[in-house]
Amino acid sequence: MMTHVAQDALRSTYREGYGYAKAGVILTHIVDAEGYTADMFCPGDSAPSQTVMSLVDQINRKWGRGSVRFARTAAQPGWAMKRQYLSPSYMTEWSQLKKVRLG
Image 1 (cartoon, rainbow, N blue to C red):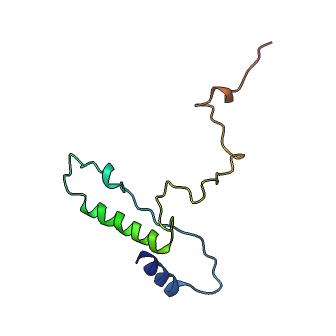
Image 2 (image 1 turned 90 degrees about the vertical axis):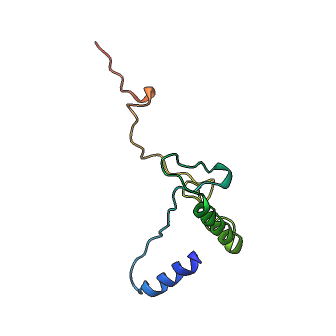
Image 3 (image 1 turned 45 degrees about the vertical axis):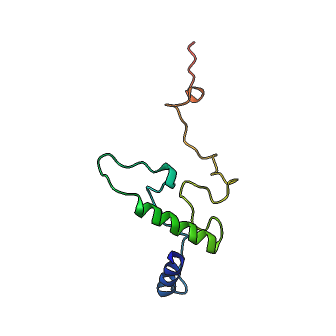
């Protein structure tokens, strides 16, 4: 369902000759049924969460495992960002502190 809606939106907005970038949808506050803990300040049932989880499971069964996944899950487990341009961590890494010699 969500995939069909996204594809329909793309068909209606796509224009030849423009550059496009990959985009995603982030769903937050999603937990498995066993991990659900009710909010002490906002009591309610987990029915909406169970509906969303069921929908995600249906999409993955139909379109293949990983078609819809949690944002914190890497698309390819072996992927990692390039780290050669990382900023120094002077405040958190003793080994990166500058050394000063006197004399």
